[in-house]
Length: 419
Ligand code: SAH
Ligand code: SF4
Image (cartoon, rainbow, N blue to C red; front, side):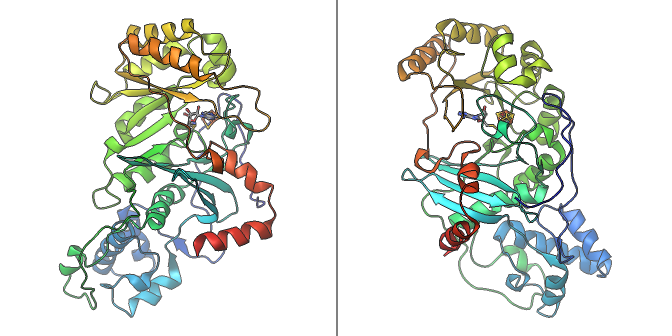
């Protein structure tokens, strides 16, 4: 890891929300990825364009960035050729750096990524028959210390910026070949377009389109609220990456005071890492419970803006042997979800062990019995199939594996991955 100063950590179960400005770049250029359209316009004006030019160019640039996924100004064919070097000198169109990219035998892809100031974080893509889900990180490390989670053993290094968050989705589109090709309708509306390409508009993908996003990578998204909100607004913007809010799920360990704002200002589906139904056990395995207890959490879920039977809240429950997996726990889970009248589905997650973890995964028979009780209570409780096990595609694990490798090994692998 590079030697960026670490952020102060405010506490174990009650950290402050610490936003950070855009990562400064050594070459003085500004990364446009992650900026809302109005900010691109302002920044162009500040760089010297007149108001009319700034308005036009910012619209064109925004479209090229998020609709076409171009990574250089040279590709922006409706912007005057003479202007492209001027833009290139002042701005960049960044992506997170790829340290390592792996594909599992089951099609799961995992990336170890790096910020410009040298901090590693992860992203995973999980293709299914009907959809492809990208698991996106919100922080490098985490301030919380859930005892079964490997990210919880890492310190919070810093929040990811909006550009680093939306950049993950853009990088996945790059890797999957999912940017539309061909002429843009948009370009035709500008008389001063000096170039154009004449191929059909098409989407190309290697059989698995990126259809869904889950904020379930490293970090607690509601402790990086502003940056996550700003990044997801670019993802959801019809002029941006144009992914419906119904296809995006944000997972929280239970940052109760931010949940209502999440529903109101972001409006995505909510997943809650419940993992236990008694105070004692949840205090132990999800320590934020000592601050915001079960009743408060479930009430915040009941009040979550936009939740309904058509848009249920997902309750994640990691199956830990002899810890939280008894029949009594399953019955209590059903009782609680009914008491709070929650439009709920339960996602049972087999525990994925990591070196040094103190838990074991519940047996398949136990998981089945637990799931059956919840189903009998009228609540859907599928068991999440472990994916990408051969590439350590579990929270926090690739990063550790990579840290053991030498720099040269990583460089070689990154070069192979990109070729
Ligand atoms: N911080 C947020 C989102 C990231 S964690 C949260 O806690 O909800 C995403 C999900 O992975 C959470 O439900 C988390 O509990 C689960 N998880 C973490 N480590 C795991 C492990 N070793 N095995 C199975 N699930 C794990
Ligand atoms: Fe942080 Fe979520 Fe891991 Fe808990 S489960 S330590 S909140 S990333």
